Image (cartoon, rainbow, N blue to C red; front, side, top):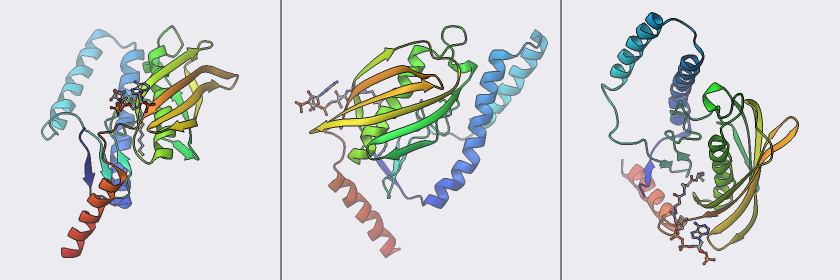
Length: 225
Ligand SMILES: CCCCCCCCCCCC(=O)SCCNC(=O)CCNC(=O)[C@H](O)C(C)(C)COP(=O)(O)OP(=O)(O)OC[C@H]1O[C@@H](n2cnc3c(N)ncnc32)[C@H](O)[C@@H]1OP(=O)(O)O
């Protein structure tokens, strides 16, 4: 797994996000507009030419491969390409605000036309992805290292409407590298989806000691500079 420390301060990250997040919101707006527009074919063709020009402009300088996951020396993970929460990913639902506390994670999200499965309802795979991410965050923060989903069980109690939703996840118990978590997706009328997962902190991840060693090496480089 690609694990990389980056030397960015909280201020530098905030600065980058202040540029990137509005851009990603604009991309989300574009996706929503393409789904819902009723303009004629000539307008659609003209829009496509403009979009192609913007894509070409962005591609003049870009990373090879995916964004990957980088960690700061404070051990914050920057997963800006992540399908569920990536700050640079316009197909990621806007679930940026995740609150963590004592092995719990909560998040509000508003899902629009891009997340539809049955008419007017959230796609079941999207629900599974969102709750998977939140369950992973509940497990990972308590553990101090990212966990992978080992087993995810999702129960769809009733249809989930597009619109505002609240989600929560909590740690139930820990057994070695396994963390048992459960969570739910709710509307104002109560839960629509419940889920349980076994999250596993993979053995090939660097240990906290190894991370601390890398962090000390970065600090030593600063001292020499
Ligand atoms: C702070 C930053 C925030 C960061 C926030 C991050 C949030 C991330 C949320 C999104 C998460 C994802 O989508 S992750 C992507 C989807 N998941 C994956 O691709 C995982 C693919 N599978 C794997 O990489 C691997 O199989 C692992 C990591 C799951 C396990 O491999 P391993 O590390 O070698 O584990 P291993 O030694 O075999 O087993 C250790 C223990 O776990 C159990 N175990 C092993 N596999 C499984 C399994 N699939 N389901 C249940 N339990 C399992 C074993 O029985 C054993 O229990 P015992 O004998 O000790 O009792």
